Length: 467
Image (cartoon, rainbow, N blue to C red; front, side, top):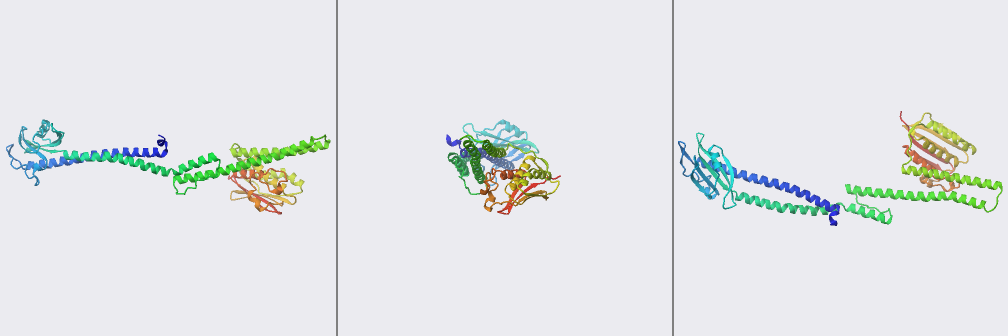
C-alpha cells in the first residue's frame, strides 16, 4: 500500500471522506425535510377534504339527519377517484356511511375517542395483510359546539413512499459517486499542485548525490505558496553555494597562508642545522624564526576570530564608548610606527562622539585601518578626521601612500585578498575583512576610495548613540 503513503493520496482520501460526510449529512437533512414536507401536504389535503365533506352533512336535534351527497364532487372531483377513503361516524362511534377504496381500513378506537372529545388528530396506520401505509385524519362533527359525530379521511402513503424511495436511491447512488469523483479529482489536483515539491525533492536528492549546489528549480513565479517555496529554495541554494564557495576558498587560503610561515621556518631551521654557525648567524636565525612565528601567531588569531564570528560564538559586549577618546588613543599607540617612517599625523576629531559598541573590536578595527595606512605610506602624511551629522559618525583615514589599483578595490574586503605589490609586506590579508565585519556588526559600513600613486581614503560610518 505504498500509494496511500504519499501526500497526494492522503489528501485525496481525506477530501473524499470529508465530502462524503458532508453529503451524507446533507442527504439526511434533504430526506427528512422532504418527508416532513410531503406529510404536511397530505395532512393539509386531508384536513381540507374533511372540512368540505362536513359541509355536505345535515344535523337536527344533535343527530346527523341527512348524509346524501356529502362525499360527492369535492371541488369537482369524485372522492373514489382521488384515492381517499371517507367515513362518517355517529356520536357512539358507529359507521354511518363510508366511501372510498379502503373500506376495511382499521382505525384505532383511541383516535375516535379523541375526536369525540373535540380533538382533531392524525395517525399513520398499516393494513394487516399488506405493507401499505395510510394517513388518517379524525375530526369531530359539531352542532352548537357539541360533538355529534366523527369524520375520518384516509389517504394512501404509496406516492409519498415511492417519492422518498426514489430520493433515497438517488442519494445513495450520487453520494458515493461524488465522493469517488472527488477523490480522483483531488488526487490529480494534489499531484499537479505538488509537482514543484517533487521537483524540490529530486533536486535535493541530486545535490546530495553529486554534491553539486549549482542545481536550481527555476520554477515560474505564479505568486502562490508553491512558487514562493520554489523561489525560497533557489535562494537558499544560492546562499549555500556561495557559503560553501567562500568556505572552500577560506580553507584553501588559510592553508596556503599557514604553509608560508611554516615553510619559511622549516627552511631557516634546515639551513641553520646543515653546519655549525657563528653566534651572529644563530641570532639572525632566531630573529627570522621569531618574525615568522609572530606572523603565524597573528594569522591564527585572526582565523580564530573569524571562526568565532562565523559560528556566532563571539558575542559583542555593547556599551557606550567615547569614540573621540578612543581614536586619540589609537593614534597615540601607532604614532611611534609613523614617526619611525617619518610620516606626519594629522587629526581633526570632534569631541564627545558617543557610540554604542564593543570597545575591543572597535579598537581592532581602527588599528587595522590606521595600521594599513602607515604600512603602505612611504612618505607624506596620514590624516584622521571624525565628524557627526544626522546621528551618523563619519571617520576618514586618508594617506598619501601607494594607492590601490581600481580593479582591486571591489575585492579589497575579501578574506586573504592582497594586492600583488602588497604581498611582499607583512600581513595576512584579513585585516580589512575583519574591519568590515566589525563595522557592520555595529550597524555601520566601510567605504574605500583610492588612486594609484596618490593615496587611499578609508571612510567608516557608525551610528551615534542618542542620549
